Image (cartoon, rainbow, N blue to C red):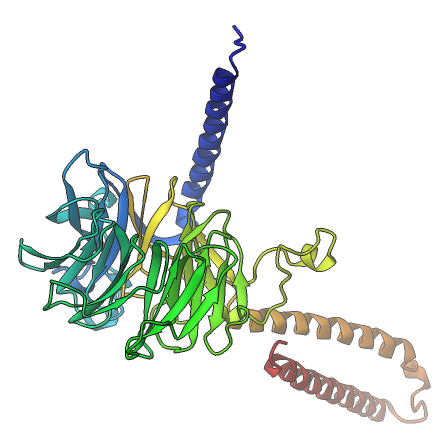
Length: 488
């Protein structure tokens, strides 16, 4: 039966398109599940009743009595949309003890631990803090003693481990998503009311310093740990601003006007002038604060708006992680910035684009969610341990295999193998040429006896071997020079 109602027809078309999209998403997820054993050292998931908005790791971990497991804890914020009581969940994850950075210190003997617990019990909720409204943002104090959260009414709450009560900080008039610890006593907040505040945890009545330089929703804040006096902000007013906490006036020290709204800003934890932004142009931009006219580099790979960024930990300072509406977490490695790359804005017919269509810095893609990813956390002491949450109500704790890209050692090995292959082919050609030009044995010193002929032939062979060795040594030196020459 057909209908002539244009509204009904449009609704049916929308439903059909949605069904096709859902089918594609489900198929992509099935493909990802099949590749899990190849991509991850460990991965565990926990499905909750409502979408999850925020996640952060506690810094400490404990080792089980049998030395087979370590336990890590996370804080997770939920969004029940007013249909239920919201909580800040404290979740414990039981993981293989081999992930611990000090595994060699407590390992028993030389054998690896035998894991016997079922994967379904790896994640469990150990504590629930009642939260007045949605847990938009959750940030754990670096020493692990406090947890700060932002609700959907603009109130900030600070929980203390071991206590049920929490402190509330009132200033913002709309909900917020931006929280950043500056020290054990200070933190920054930014909300949809376009206001930014610097708080002293001992004073709940009002921020100690206010920044009203934006004119729209504050999307992200980032404290510059390397400088200890700077922080950055991005907002829906198309501006990126860098502020000095010491300045008496509110005007930003640096202001960049963007073509697209930026959703996130993040300073590098140890390089004072390096920061990254990302937003609705689906691109991650890397900047040097000393020259803000244009980005140092743009990173590609997302198919939707980018909503979050994280730098790698102390063990991986060159790694940058991004996530967004395309349900993926992307890993970029700045070690490959020097490799030739033509951005996707180039003409389709460009030969360079055909030669290198993927960003060489893009090293890994985590595709374990079927809805948008809202937050990502990196464990501060366990290398390459991640947690992600999203609108699919899933908490995922995982560690990818350490095969990020083609390492320098692998590059050297491949280059050496290729060089050896070329030298072998050249030597075979030389052997053939030498054999063709070499006189017949009957023409060599025929007047001498057989013993002298034998000695002379052995001397010729030894001289030829010495010549080959010299050629090989020259080739090795040339290969070494090529390997030591930095890429352009």
